[in-house]
Image (cartoon, rainbow, N blue to C red; front, side):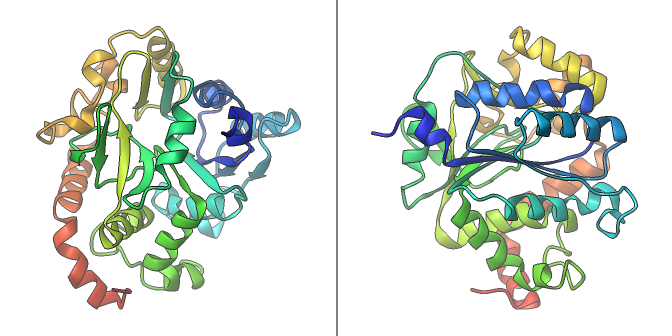
Length: 310
C-alpha cells in the first residue's frame, strides 16, 4: 500500500492563471491542505497577468512552492484574444507536467477538507477502472449521468476547475480531438469552432469520455469535503474564501451536479453568489447551456466536418 507522500509525489498540481495575486498564495496552500501535503510538482502558466501577480509567482517559485513557472507578455500573440485564447496556456501547462497524474484546477475554485484522510488514495485507485476518466466535481449545474456507489456518482462532464486524472489519458484526449490544431500552433481550424472555440479542450475531454464510454467520478459533497467554483476574482475572491473557510452558507451550494434540472441563469450555484451579483452574463449562460445540452448529438457531424477520428 502506498503512503500519502508516495501518492503525492506522483501528482502534478497544474493551472493556467490570470491575476488574483492578492489571494493566489493562500489558495495554493488550500489545495495543499486538501490533498494532504505539497504534491510532486506545482505547475503554473501565466495568462498575461499584471506585474503584482507575477511578483507573487516569483516569490512562490523562490520559496519552492511553485516548481515550474511560465510567464507571458500581455501583448504576446497567444494573448491576442485575451481570455478567449486561454486554452493555449492550458495546453502549455499540461504539456510541461511530468508526473503520472495531473490535478487541473482554477484559482477561483476553493477546496475544503476536514477528515477523510484517504480520499486521495481512494481516488487514485478508482482511476484504474475502465469506466473512470477523472475524479472531479465543482459543478454549478446538473451534471449527473448515473449513480456509482454510495457517496459517489458518475458525470459525463469534466471541468478544468477541478479534475484529477492520468496524464496519459489527458494527452490522449486532447490529441485525439485536436491534434491538427495543436500541431499548427493553434493557427488552423479550431475543431470546436461550431460550438465553443475557447472551450476546445473541455470539449476534447467530453468527446474522449463519450468515445470510450468513460465518466468523471464525483464524490458527493458534505460539510467536511467540498470543492466550490466561485467565478469571482481579486478582492471579492479573497472575501469569498474567508466566508468559505468559515463554512458560512455552504449547504445550498453543495452537490449542484446532482440537480435534476439546469438552473435558470446560473443563480444559486456559484458560491460567489453569496454577495448577490450574477456571475455569468445571460448571453454566456445561453451559449453554455445550448452547447453542452446538445453536445452529444453534434459529435458525429463534427467528426465528419473536421475529419476527427471515429
